[in-house]
Length: 134
Image 1 (cartoon, rainbow, N blue to C red):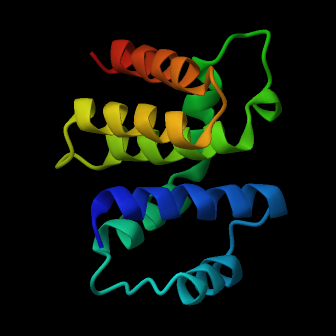
Image 2: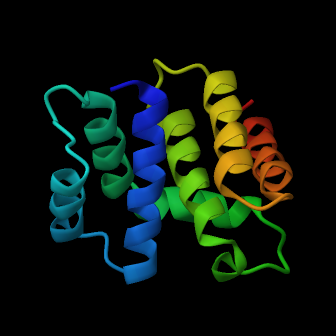
């Protein structure tokens, strides 16, 4: 499966997990079965999920620190939050993926799955992350 398709599935899974407030193995296993994801073939999906779960608090804290001080993370649209979780995990923990690719993919996914302003919001957040990293 192409990495783009795996990103889409990760966003859908993170969305489902966020809606259920459950990031445990049961939803993960159910999602794998329902979407015919094979850990041997779809290594990116498995790797990014594992990296996110292992670093969930730090990644979410990073996202929280990048949004406006007057905003709370609960105000971020769940789809946008899911896209940000995938992108921030890639940028911070997957050195083999160029930053520009992660940002571009996140913007495209926001255009496909978010509302009309999602891609601008996500671009701004990821731009702020890049400033912090550099």
